[in-house]
Length: 284
Ligand code: NAI
Figure 1 (cartoon, protein in one colour):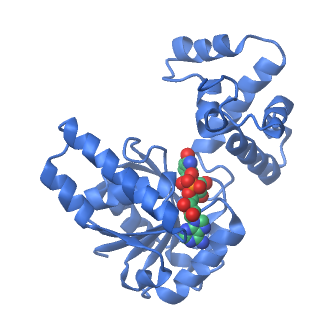
Figure 2 (cartoon, helix red, strand yellow):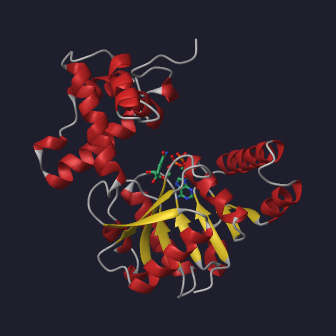
Figure 3 (cartoon, protein in one colour):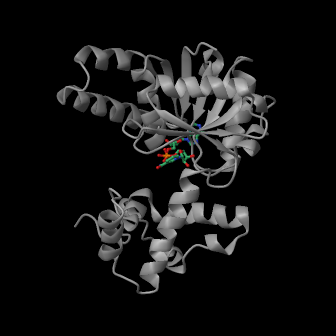
């Protein structure tokens, strides 16, 4: 399939990044959000990032203008009626996503592929909300989208080879490297990353080493660009806990039990960088 028009739903952290990368790669893009305020913020954010890219001479002024001209803000899903691919990046909630997919199923042309950027919800279940499960697929981008090279492409139980090929080609057009992943809890990225972060929290909880020293071990000992506790603060401790719970429930294996210290911090409202406190303190 020749993809011309794309809709990205959700203009938050991920959706705005995905829309930016799609527009920069030459696709005509609707960026949709049900909140006008969020949409405005998302569009402003893209403009700011593109301006910075011009300043750093990574793109030209003309490329910036062309990219912005290909981006169309949208507050109604009916705009998806002219789209070949829709990438959903709304809140991580099955009920909300299922509703969006059911609506898209009614609105989009028959050939359209419906993709989800979910980081933990089963693609097979999302596909169940539509009458075209063979054209539903996971497209899991990493944060921040314009910088991170990886896309996990997740095959739901009924995803067709044709759908997979189209999305794999699209990822190439977006200058991303994709990996093929099957629809199991945590996919591949979070299946590996989150237990490592959880184990780092256990090491802290059991007094093995201090916060700083645990991070130093992984940075200088394993050459990770960032220690696991710093990374957890960046991702958000609530998100880390949520994904550990998905793994724990999905596999029923005690090796995925969330560390009690992680839960305690989340209960206290220590959610990491976004709340000003996690394993480290931020701001004043
Ligand atoms: P966010 O909270 O920054 O943005 C979500 C946006 O969706 C908000 O602007 C909200 O107004 C909008 N929205 C909610 N319901 C909607 C609806 N029915 N129709 C249209 N817009 C709607 O969330 P974020 O972080 O961008 O995450 C979005 C998705 O991406 C989630 O599924 C998340 O799991 C996934 N993800 C997040 C990553 C991250 O590091 N934040 C990394 C990879 C995936």
